[in-house]
Structures are given as C-alpha cells and as structure tokens.
Image 1 (tube, rainbow, N blue to C red):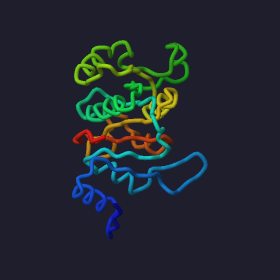
Image 2 (cartoon, helix red, strand yellow):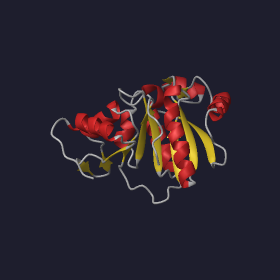
Image 3 (cartoon, one colour):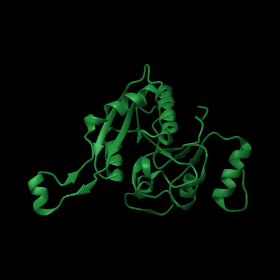
Image 4 (cartoon, rainbow, N blue to C red):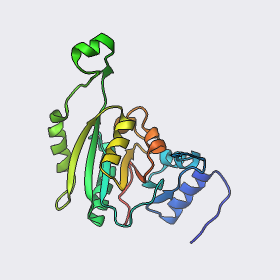
Length: 215
C-alpha cells in the first residue's frame, strides 16, 4: 500500500506508523551527496531521535543473505533491545553475530609524557577486565546455536565502531538509543550520531523501549 500526507514528515510518519501498527521503519540516506558521503538527512535523523520502533537506515544495499551482524553495546539495559534484535536477525539469517564494546580513553597523553608512558591514551580498564560483563550479558541473551563472538576495541567511539564493523565485514550494524533523544551517549560516546552520518552501510537503530519486530 502507498500513503501520502501533508505535514511535518517525521511527525506524520511516526503517527501513521503507530496507527498502522508497523513494526519497523525503513528510511533512506540524505539526497545531499558528495564523494564517499551519504548523510542520514534531517527527517531520518529526527525519526531516529523520536521513534519507539526499530528504524533501518538503508545507507547501503543489505545482502540477500547477510553473513555478519555487528551490534554495539555498553552493557546497559538501554542497549539490550538492540542486542535482542541482533540475536533474532542472526538466527533468522544464520549469520555470525559480533557483540562490540568500545573502550573510550579517559584522557590523552602528549609529548614527553606519552614517550615516557609508552602510549598516548589512558584507559580505566583493559579488555580482559570486562569478562564478567560479557558473562552477565550472555546470560540475558539467547545465544544458543548462534555463531557469535565478542570484541572490545579501544579508541574514539565513532572511528572505533565504524572500523570494527568494516573489519568484520558487517552486512548490518545494530545500535541502540534511549528513545526520545539522540543516539545514546552512554552506548556510543559523545559523538554517537556521527556513526549514522559516517558509516556507509545499513544501520538498524533500536530504541530502548522498542519491541522486537515481527520478521
């Protein structure tokens, strides 16, 4: 079916989607194109900020049979619906699931201090210290029978997430939001919305209060 309405695009889309009982919104990238860049656009960005249902931002072609899904997590309850969705899709497609956590540096060292320390970034914990968090997370997810692994990467959130997704050969990147706000800073860091702007592949955005959509 096709529908056309007058009004603010993001408002009308969300109201009609609720009336129709939709489980998933599909939006495309901005039409403002330049070499190597596909932004999400104002309407898509506002939908991501306000929706109570998963939104697939189709910035690239989704493989006919996706083989790898990368899902970002900060181990919070807000990120769990996105992980549940990623698990269900991985099971549906028999795809590998990569659960990703980014360790953001507490601060950066410069000059002589960095040379003495032998590194330029200081972290509160190391990846090995997070095993209890991974075990707790796994206990809340139905991972039985899935090909899955977890990965911890260090660095600035935007670059680290995009790099990890690209290195994994992800067909789909899954992230969570708080719902009526921008993409959660707790999950992806202070520049989280830049992930949607800069990543060139499909991104599934799942609000914290969303239900798993019917596949």
